Amino acid sequence: MKRKLITSLLCVSLILSLAGCAKQTDNTTAPAAKATDAVVNMVSNTYLEGYDTFEVTSPDVVDGVWVDDISNTKLGDNSSPELSWQPVEGAEEYVIYMVDRNSKGFLHWKSGGIKETSLPRGWAPKDLEYNGPHVGHGYTHMYDIYVIALKAPVDKIDGAVNCNNGRLAEFIESLNTDSDGNTGNIISYGVVSGTFTDARFRDEEPTGAYNK
Image (cartoon, rainbow, N blue to C red; front, side, top):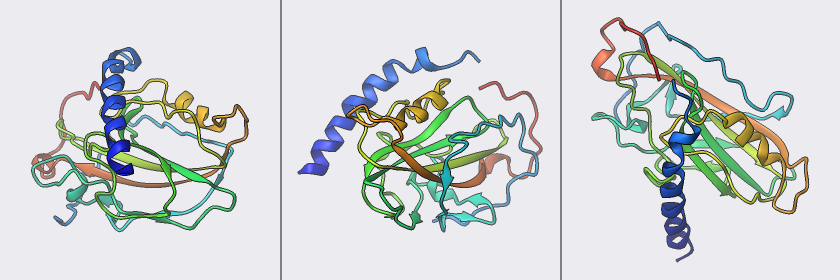
């Protein structure tokens, strides 16, 4: 019942987030296949610099490439990746963001209030919290999953899934203030990364400019 209630609330949140997506946007289990060498127009977004880190692992990254199953393509199941990490001392909950590094804050996964430290594949509700890689331009993109350890819950987790979020750095940093207004809420974070290339283009060199 609790999960159904959370899912219902997430539906409302998703609708509101998508409605505001344009305002945030800048104008601008199949085995993994080998990605093309070129990772074009790399946007070197780095988040949470200066915080302590911990290790996050996923069997869904094979030789640096996300497996097809996690993608929102014909070869995939649009299932959130399996993740695991060691419990962080003092952490009451965790937040997850999955970001396309070749974009301006394009989110593929946003979940909060996480108590577990081991998530099976498909844990996140599809479309509501997770929308897997779905590159259609023939380019190899890098996808980073951030797991953020928090001392206490926060009022909200900003950002719209399946959208560019030009203020994502600000959204992530806002987690450092808990629901009671106390700062210093972020303890540490972990990142697991991999590339993904749409299967239609894996044997072709990308052409043209990527403009999203």
